[in-house]
Length: 263
Image (cartoon, rainbow, N blue to C red; front, side, top):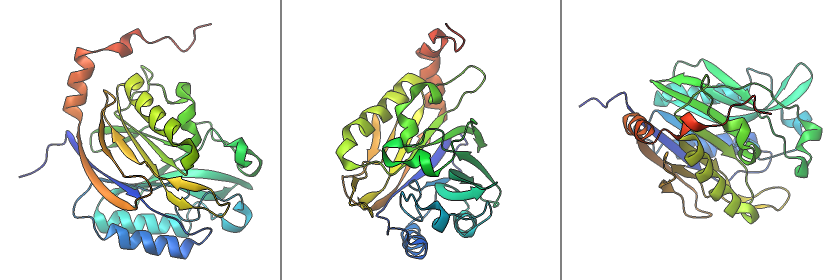
């Protein structure tokens, strides 16, 4: 039986990362993806090939580089879109760039808007300033990156820019896990949208611990799936757009949202 186009299979990959070692990370993720039987979208953490490094001069790649090529290989192998962020150099600037790679190898990208100044990310990377909403299999998908989660105006649904699924890829420390979990639910509730948050686990090269807490949350703020803290794993969850649209019709809070030009 064919699945309805209203359904989307979303795969969350919660994994440890080897500090600043692309080969090890790409190999370990390839091994983990072998568990997939069927999916529409694979979501990887922020800077999944390197960890959250402030050495873009050593680790960056051009727009069409090694890591993007591997993402295209995965997309082709699993006939699934693949999302994750990569360190990219373009026009003599470095970006924390989230690539959304389609099964045919084409891609779109979003450059992280809010750079984490507490780790000096703003001193090493350039900030993006463009929205990206992706049309994929009848769904509208908005990718964002880590620290973007703290800024609700940037993610807010707009009448002319709506989406069904909001995704955050992250390297979010365990010591702030409660804000991570709370804000993911808040973004889902206030935007009447599904929200996926995919975070890494393990210690990074700065001895910062990450508990993961990756999750998929529905438009009412209910958790559909959440990884156990610190556990590596891969999980595929099915979401339904018809259920989302029915809830929005019955509870149209978005019609009472403040205008963006309010003073």
